Image (cartoon, rainbow, N blue to C red; front, top):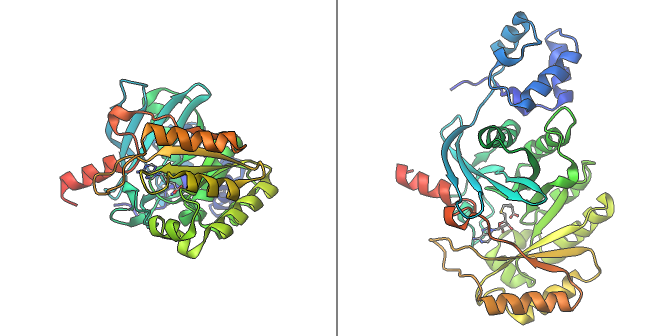
Length: 347
Ligand code: SAH
């Protein structure tokens, strides 16, 4: 395994410093940065660089490429799920969804996850490592190349907790947004977090007004700590203060993810508590009937209860929508394909 750094990990300004160190003109950094985000897989494809410079670069750096290990296409809605193999043999998942507002990719930010949410498949087995910046970018590039679909929206809702990999994720966000990078507008990029409040503040300070999505899932601290251990460190009040601060600093609305779990989070009493927490017109609630994870006992709420819960919020002035299930025939909810593949290999 090569230990050379992956050139796709760097921001354009970092590449400028690298060029200086190599004694090259700084405009080369822009050329290289552009090539890397157009999806080149090898130095030889950077045709406007001299052979000498390409050789110099490849003696110090590598260009890493994710490999498609498995690909599933939904016959219901065309959703595509990729299982990518990384250079060290680990796996991550990405999902491409075709929405009216544009093709959206859901990317992973870590190999596994340490947050321990009880309902989540990615938490089983914990976190193996953070993804490098280039490995996050390459999910977009390889999915785009393979599917032939132009991706216009990115959601960081795949495997991992993006704010637990803050440095690499912030470089990714810069590169995704940069005009010479993936060139996707900040409002078309969503970062989803289970609630690492102090990193929400750091995200607000990046100066990239990406959409923030907070996985709240429960309006009561005691219960939330039970299903989402992160709540013990950052309780609901602290989390929502950070979210409000994010809105103030970026001018963006924040969406609240709320998983409806039968008998756990779906009572009308919880709907009332949720309403009182989120009053003030700053939030929008995305309701997600919980996906079944084999190892977990949680089940989704009944259609009747989902409707009651959603109507209660909407009728009382808190906008709430039900997340449309995509790719249900290919098990598109994240973390499950990786787990199955690891199990079949005996990991
Ligand atoms: N770590 C980040 C992003 C990854 S998960 C976060 O927590 O936000 C993306 C979303 O899927 C989160 O809202 C997460 O809570 C939710 N999720 C995880 N497992 C789920 C399941 N079994 N059913 C429904 N939603 C789930």
